[in-house]
Image (cartoon, rainbow, N blue to C red):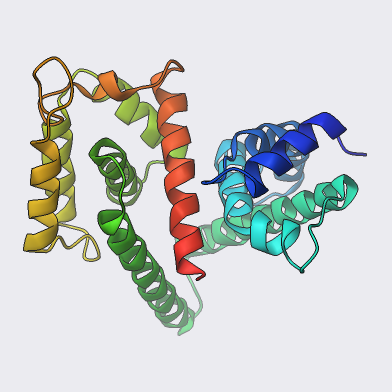
Length: 266
């Protein structure tokens, strides 16, 4: 039985198929209401996940996957708009269940590494990981190029780059990265955030800024913003919307990732 109303479904449908760019706000609300308790239960029942406190990570990753897939994978999968709320509820559970299994499998592999492997097994897994890592780096490099070429405000571009860096360099989750940006950088200027991104980029192969891209970022930071200050001189918190910093950053990231997804599937 679905846990969202027809009215909520209609709002989500308009946000995703009428708004340009699409908004994922109601999608996130519906996903949280519908899936949270099941994800908690699945984690509790799977010995590879029990006690790991991965429920939030699975929830957020599931929402991100749904944002990437729901338009072309469900609503506009055929020439006719799929506006079936019951079918969408089943689709959400399928995405969440698959994501939970992926997390469980990954945790199982990590546990196996800690215990040690049979002779030759470690080499095989290392080879698989190298292939997966290379493919992931290629996707991230493509997303990186899209972000830097996009007609988007510089504070959103730097937010996307910083969040990727926190996740990769410090093993942060998306939620943790949002919190770091909202709390530790609120009083810092946008130029200071940019300097942090450049510092992280030195250790991330796919985050390789060309001279032209650096010039574009520099020009954007030098553009006038408000009260006689440039974007680069303005504190990061000044760009937050009326909602709190973490919610603002989450909204920016959702929209940026949605833009990347649409451009990658063209």
